[in-house]
Image (cartoon, rainbow, N blue to C red):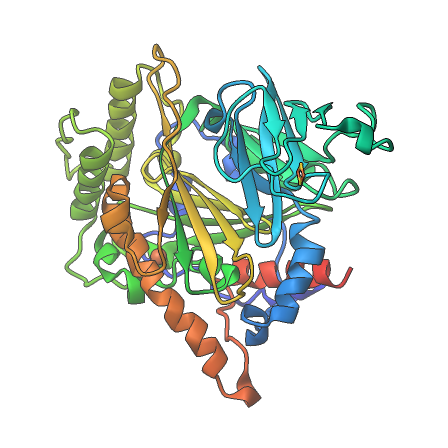
Length: 469
Ligand code: FES
Ligand SMILES: [Fe+2]
């Protein structure tokens, strides 16, 4: 335990009751064999730092982030199923930084700086395929593994040979069907950066899933403002009040897993119980039924709703029903505990990747800065669904681009009831971005909650460490 954490001993870790238990109590009575990795607790307590608002809009601060953060850390690039054939490639833009990832062999991927060696032209601007990488300007060509193939009038470029004219590479790492890249050859490995994630997600099997739906929305807010909207469930009471009867936001659990090179934040929001902020008339029976109804309407339309017995453990009944529905849909056992079937557990990997360990809302998030304006950013969401045991992996859904004034409900209805919730979150974005700039200059910082906003605290602590290097 670090020094600061001793000072935090007195903080209250969630607000629950006997009828509306804290996450820790719900997980302790899981009806299935325990996923021991998931039960491992966080090991770090952040300092209770407040965040200077300047870092949400200052161009100088954004420049530092590109130099010392985004070009030094592992960044999610895409999923393997996005580029299924040899030669398939996609651009990976992170603000002004740009790379592209290509499938160079059946089971090999490479990533390159997205700039022609001749005069800098961008080499990949959209999903492309084919046996060579050809610059659109003067037609220099490289093979899919980055080796130089051809330069028109090569005699004019005597210093460039087939040997030294390869495209400059950046590092590629893979986990669970995801492809990550890192432009810093001295950065720690992807494995060190992922830290506890592979062990915790073992039974969730991200590699046996596919991108069923995907959107990328342009936001009128800094990338950190956007990410922080998901790093706590404290905002449910203000932003998503209709969720209070079946979402235990106040009973949520927050943890930090810190290793030498890994920073993971975990937020667990229990479902199928009312929040402590819900009216006293809200019942666990109704919350359980509502959770089953949402799961059926979105993921299991052909599976009958459960017949819940109020005299028995409702959470165990819901867990069994979810596992039965999963088996009916995918022809295999989910092999996962109630916590994975029912609750919403979100893991953040520093600095800007997040993945839900949740069969109800199996999303993957990527928060990226805008290419030139720190007051804007992109929020990308994938719906990472399983597919039937006996079927081939379905094709990856194309990314739907959503403009700054467009809604997710209208452009990406495949996200079902969550598109409404996302739009509620998105509605806050321009208000936050405007407000942090308008704040009293003598009190130009946030007031983060000691427990419920501890992931945000840790992220800024870690950001400080990176920018100070
Ligand atoms: S800039 Fe690419 S070939 Fe000339
Ligand atoms: Fe939200």
